[in-house]
Amino acid sequence: MNKVVSMRRKCVNIETNVKCTLQCPSCKRTDFKEKYGQNAPIPGGNLTLEDLGKCIDYFSNGISFCGQHSDPIFSPYLIDMLKLCKEKDVRCDIHTAASHRPESWWREAFLANTDAEWW
Image 1 (cartoon, one colour):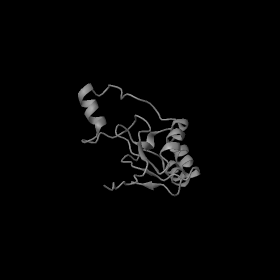
Image 2: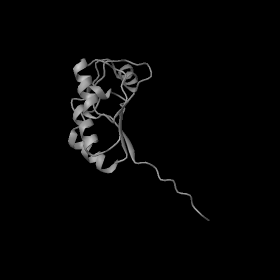
Image 3: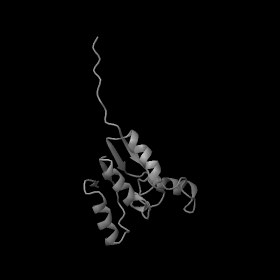
Image 4: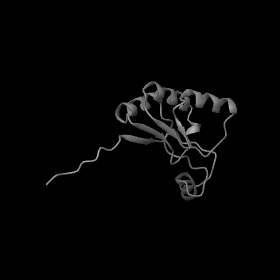
């Protein structure tokens, strides 16, 4: 019997931080706040550049910055993370719904990795 084996791309979805300014109705963050109270801290912290480097070594085909409890633009390290992905030639995409950053930040982020795909 022949087995068909599909080669799956080794990609990962990264949660970069625990911050977001929005309260989207279907977001896990909103569910958490409704269950535990608006002042309940979301567990976790900021993903460091060093931690991302370890992920890139394993998930070399792609990094998706798409938070479940946060928006990736609120990571204090996102621009450096985008640069690291560019340097390591790792595909990345950023999924954001928030816009609470100055225009200068957006310019710097876009230029940090011109190959990144923004959603």
